[in-house]
Image (tube, rainbow, N blue to C red; front, side, top):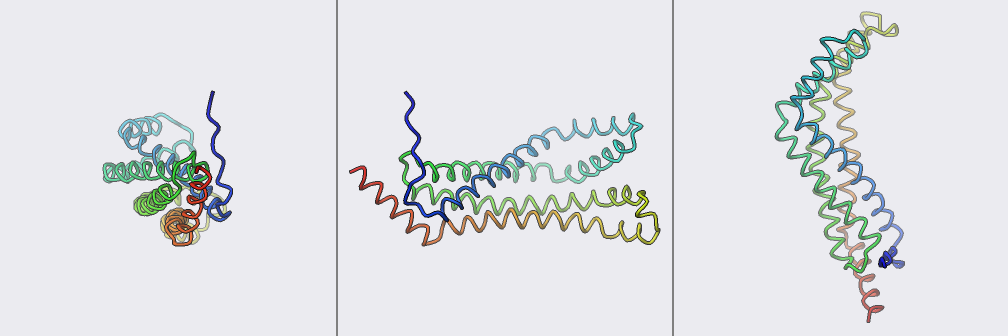
Length: 219
């Protein structure tokens, strides 16, 4: 017979439970994305060959543009492949720790909450650091893709004016890089805030009090 899973501690403040849920979801999405790209980087040469064949034999203009964008992305990733693979691999591990710790904080299963709190705070801060490095690398990739996207958009009727097309080509690479940095600030900033929150004195005291209540019930 399966043992029943312990529910979320009833005395745990709502703010802590909400922060744990946010960390659970964020670490799941971020970790999965990092792991997927790590696997893609390990097959970068194969991807380059596939894109090269697509651009050589395809007649579809949309597919050709997609192939050119992929070629620029691969060219930007190749010099940083090893370093980026290490960063993404470490990020996926940190997110895995944050995911497990968040889940255990919500459903402790008899484990000491203080130990879970310390692991969650540390994992979230490490994830914030690694996601910042990841974002800086991706901003370089986004900047290299920007000119090709601008060239494609300049063929649309709304950008037929030469001055507008020139302005688009000048600004889009910077906008693509800026968008990558904004997304980095949102994700890494959220991880950093969560890490600091779970390491704060208020959360530590609430967790310690809850551990004390659970110990009294067991006695």
